[in-house]
Length: 281
Image (tube, rainbow, N blue to C red):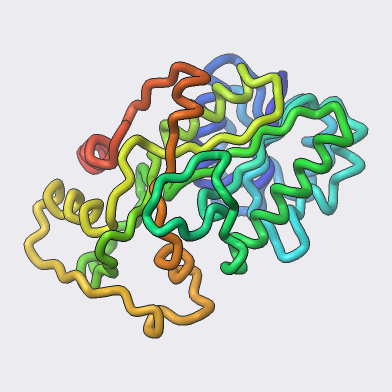
């Protein structure tokens, strides 16, 4: 088993450490100079994007973390034939719970209606998912689509000096989050244990408002000066990436993945996850 992560970044750093700890050889493909300059760890090699085809040829499993573009997933668009004619047996495609769109604060699961097309960024992901599904159906390659909630963990969110100055908030607007350590463990489990194509939400147990999430940070860091401001879509801007987070209100369920793999979260809520992260930062 050899795993290549195409689009090596924040998630992949922790994911490949988790996979390689099981004695599995891993490749991370990136153009990020900071990652390329770091010394390789045991069982992990970081290589430039120009060597993507080589990584595909060497691998049995792919994790696609590269974001989609307006055409589809750039990996699928450029390397479709190479993947098709390789030794790849399984692909994990990293998507987003943003594809569900707005459900007026109600719970959604993997079978819920996909309503995210009104946002350009989510529309790209929806199209990329569809094309990966079509590709999987036309090959013998297993496809697992992973829809991630908002990610937090070491150095994320990036709490700079001005973080608490003007904190955007919207009453009764829910977000689902997940710690990067749980993402790493669950994707590793999928790679090892899922032999059929499927779709999974990876989020923790407790959706929350941004206000409650930030108030937990404030309490843990003992911040005295902070200010919440109400969300105003006119001020955020019609094309802002930030706006997509405020126009889709939903609570995302993780029941399917927990039941299938009998998984217990390291950080079942943002409260425990933030406490650990801030304590160890």
